[in-house]
Length: 65
Image (tube, rainbow, N blue to C red; front, side, top):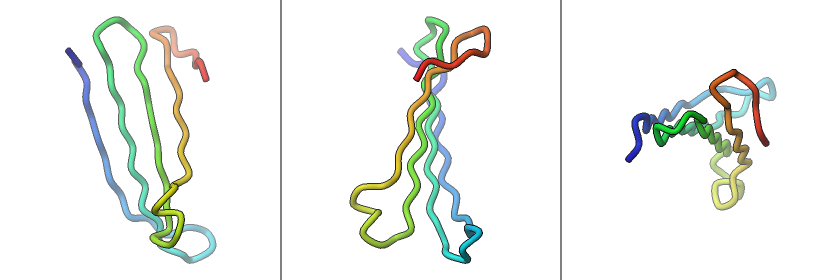
């Protein structure tokens, strides 16, 4: 059971002037570490396979990749 299950979607303009959709998730199963995932796409072909990154943050603030 997740204690934290947070999703955020934002539309941002990059330094290149293009609009990007940024979707972020943070999930916590109550055991300590928090998984954070971010996906970015520009609405073109990258929407099919967006740039993604996953990180796990431990309670002490360190990251496992």
